[in-house]
Each structure stands twice: as C-alpha cells, then as structure tokens.
Image 1 (cartoon, one colour):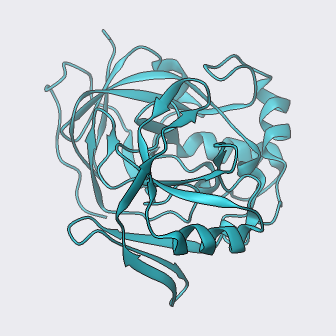
Image 2 (cartoon, one colour):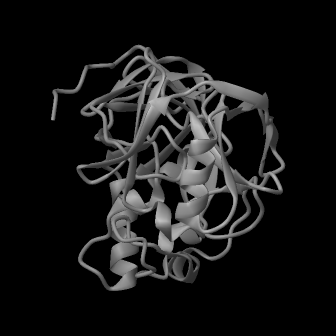
Length: 275
C-alpha cells in the first residue's frame, strides 16, 4: 500500500484514523470491479468509471442484480484508442474500437436522465444479448453512469459488523461495489457524516445519505451465486431506513464532489466537524 499523503489543516478538520483501503471502478456498469491505486474524481464521477451500460428493449437499465451471466466478466477501456475489451479470466471474448451510434438517453431510477449513445457496431449488442439470454443494447455514457451521486463510501468496520451479525468470519466488501472503502472508526461511522465535508487526497466531498442496497449484494462476487441474505441481515439489526430511492436496507453512504481531485489508496480521510 502506498503511503498516505498528509492532509491535515487543508479543510480545517481534525485528524482521524480513517484511511482509504480500496478503490473500485469498472468501465462497464455491472461487470467485475478493478481496484486501481488511485482515481481522478470529478464533479460527475471518476474518469473512466462506468462509461458503458446495458439497457433492455424497454430502455430499462440492466445490472448484475438479475443477470448472473455478467459475473466473472471484466471490461478494459482504453480511452485514447477507444478500444473496449471484454474478458473472462485470461480469455478475451470480444474487443473492438467503439464508435457512437444514435442517441439513447437513459433514465437513472427516476432521478435524472443520463446522456448516452448506442454503440454503433451491433456485434456488442449481440454479444451481451446472447450472454444474458434476452435482447439488450450496450450504450456509451457521455458522463460516468453513477446511480445517485458521483461517490460512495463504506467503512470496513461496517462490513465487519455485518459479518458479525451474519455469524461469519468475514464478508467481501466487493459485493457492495462502493467507490471508496476506508478503515477506522466504529461500525457505520459514515452514517454520522451526513452533510459534512470530507477531504480525501486532493478531493473535497460532501457526505450524503445512505445507499439503499439491492439484491446484487446477496450474490458472491466471483460466481454470482446467491450465498448471503445481506438485505435480511442489514434490516435485522438496522431496520428499514429512508433514502433518496425510498425505504430499505441502507449500507454505506453517497457523497457529492465539492472539489475534484486525486484519491489514492493510503490517503487519510479528514472529516470537517464544522461542515
């Protein structure tokens, strides 16, 4: 792990024991995650993250929640050459240069409309349709296809508490697909930051409300098999809570970006208690 960059005093916050432990991104929404050492976070999301997404014939966003076949696939996107590759392990299943086709703006859970274009080459639609077992189309978004806010955060203490509640030694936090994971603090300490400013690396964020979890969290990150009733466990000890997407099992938080910047594994997370 690279050494953390000192950030004391920039935001006026107090030193904490919160440290970034992992970052998670993927070029295609719903496919396996990459864990880069650093990310460039903008007001709209991470550069290169969730640049592509799948929709069905009704224009409905598709994810790994109901599409187990997406598990085990990794996407690799080269921005300069505009080349997208889909792999399963060491096997490259499809690769090609991406050109935009017709506009296909997409509804994101009723919160906003995501500007996007259908990928011009039909081979991509055929590939994913055959894989999933029904017609879908691959779109390229003109900005990161985030669900609600450009950043999400989850403490390792929260994941450890979930494991304890489930009677397990550990749980892979990757099943929650959060952008920023951090260590330190009591379980669910991130819930107490709503409305406060956070500095991580060069970026400044505004902590938001809780993330309503979906059934994708019940699936094993490698196989896609349902192997843990996360929603039942979360509501069992935290109850159903309100969120921007309605009441449900909340785990982790959203955050808006006040100041774009670079965030690296090992960076300290500073909380501005004055907001």
